[in-house]
Length: 464
Image 1 (cartoon, rainbow, N blue to C red):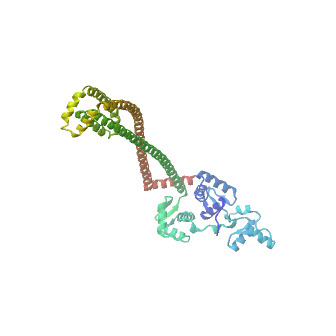
Image 2: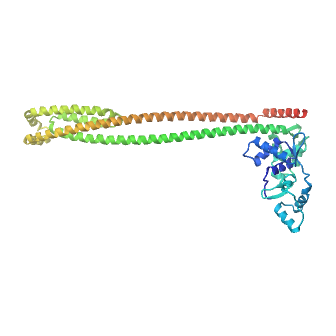
Image 3: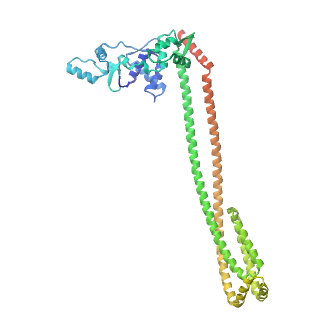
């Protein structure tokens, strides 16, 4: 039969037709799984109670068990016979066309009469059919079929008898029957190989299972919430790492610029040294100056150490400039003695002979030019020293700020790693507790306690 059930009333008709009699607590899980998955169990139970009370086709006995009244109403007998003859669903529009052509009386007075009749069900395509067409035993699970068979025989059945009954409805093996009976605790063994169904224990089992599933759902939501939190923290850390990388790049660019400026300054110092070498005629002072330049170049390898030595280097250059000024004044006073010494150095250094001869010829003009150049170079050197000192102070401040930011970022990263480790430990603990709870529920001793509680509740219910 094409189509599916579209209303809660039809689903209740189908369930009660299959199980014959059930309480509201037993019907609620079936309805919740079929059509009301978005609602809570309590809300579904209220809707089921209201629907059962509204329609007269649902009746109940003293044990608060509801069953379906299949006697029907006299007004719907003609429509019932029509469906039996056609053996397929019929819509009310087709029925009206048939009545209009044949000019007969109405087969159905109102659609509400069919809803209140336990023999009919409405499909989602607008067709009406009989309840026995909808209920097919093969569509139900093996557990539901076993429950139905044991409800038919409340005194109990053996596994072979259950197999004989259920095999008429569905293709199974006796091993499947034994597995179902051993799997669920509400199938009780009252004798050797005789099994019965305990509805009260079934309700307690469903309640315990529901509580367990809700606890698992809460744990799963908590785990998802923690995972989202740590994922956001990781994203924040990644952003901070990118910012630190950018700051590293800026620092490296600033250091590279500083190295270029030091190279420029070194070139200026070398040019100044070359001009000073023309004036200084002492090899010892020239060698000392070269050694100082080589030492300053070797110290410039480390950036932080270079920043510290920058002030010291500037001070040393000022002292050397003062020494050079003194030497220049001394050289001006003792030019005649230097000429005699130059003649002695001719044998040792041929290159100095030519320079000394040129200095003798162009002494007066060269001294004046050198004096003017020295004055200009002194002014340039003072300007460069001032500019370099300002830039050095700025770079020191930037380096200190960047180092502080880097330390703070590293501290935050360490704290986050610790918190992440703690979260992993908590997750492992939760998993261990979950495994322990599963092992406890699998314990046969707990099943025996549950069966004992069910028997006590069953006896108290019978006593009442």
